[in-house]
Length: 195
Image (tube, rainbow, N blue to C red; front, side):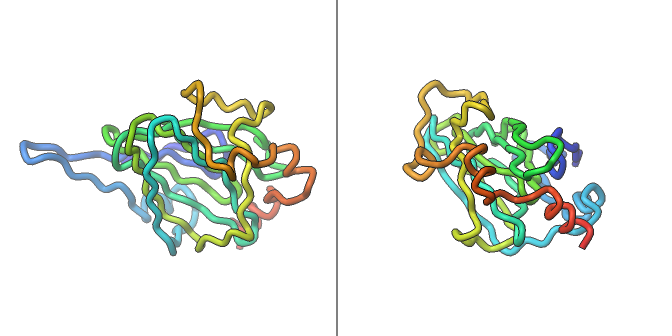
């Protein structure tokens, strides 16, 4: 397993080392001890989710306020998605920047997404299925949604006419969320890691 930090602080790409033979393949898609070496703490997971999307569907970009924050560990178990992270932590040195990674059922990469990073994805295949572990239970009152089509963030989604939910279609821009004072703050993210 190879774990590499991404350009956004608190985000890591995880490449498993599959074993294959005539029967098929086997891999460890998550190793808490190895991830803890990079994070400096052992992640705690309390909820596991799965979503299936048709090709061209964009889900997100969503983030949870800090506290409580919500870290995620995401992988694609069927098909392919373009997975996107946006730094939504006000005061972060990379605030407003995004990072995109192809997750699919061939390479079987995963992403660790630290608290305060917005998460979205675009399904590249029909029935693209993503599973993810969450460090906190979902609470709609702490979730914030940014339009995935925010022109200032300018995510390079790989589809010309994405399909969005009503919630994501009507979501605010990053600048509007920042002006409303409802985004996570960089110092709160740092305090989670020190605590």
